[in-house]
Every structure is written in C-alpha cells, then in structure tokens.
Image 1 (cartoon, helix red, strand yellow):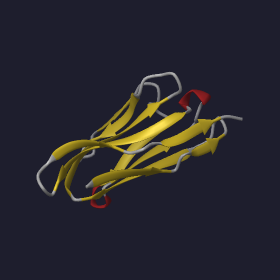
Image 2: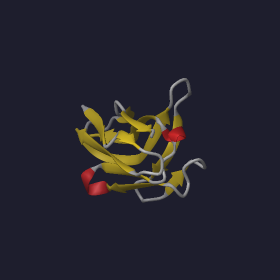
Image 3: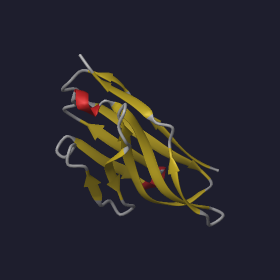
Length: 120
C-alpha cells in the first residue's frame, strides 16, 4: 500500500503565502517524479508544478515567479511554496507521484487534496 498525504492548505489573503507539503508513505522502493495539480470549481484539473527525482522542475506559466516546487528525496516529501497568492489560485491542490513499490509495481498515485482559498 502506498499513500500520499497533503497538508498546509487554508485560507489566506491576496498577496499572502502558504507552503503545501506532501508525504509519500507505505511500501515504497523508489519515488520518481512528484508534482502538484489543482482543480478550481467548475474547471479541469491542471498541472501546477512538477519535479524529477534529480531535481529538475517545471512550473505552469500562471505560477512562474510565484510558486516553487521542491523535494527531499530521503523523506519522500514534496513541497509547494506559494507566494503572492491571488484569488485565481483558489483550488483544491493535489499531490501526485510516480512510485515503484517494493513488489516492483510502478504506479501513479494521488493524494486526497488540500483546499487553498485566497480571499479577503
């Protein structure tokens, strides 16, 4: 069993900051790419940022310069530092990871999501 658990969401005023965390746990052999997606009400889920096990990153144009993805491989943890938040960033944020289990199964896993609300 593998699971991803996000934390760090909440209510923040426009211009504020939040840091999301996601920890992968369970029967993990290795974790490949990790990423953050978000889904706003009435919209499709979209990629926010992704990071490889080697540290290469990719950020959506809408968050470049404001959000930063990072990870600690030894802790199977990925972070999303969000600065200068805007109301348009309001969404449920989901963690995603490509994981090889100890039984050699390779799968794509999702967390249950954490809500970020940007409002005054």
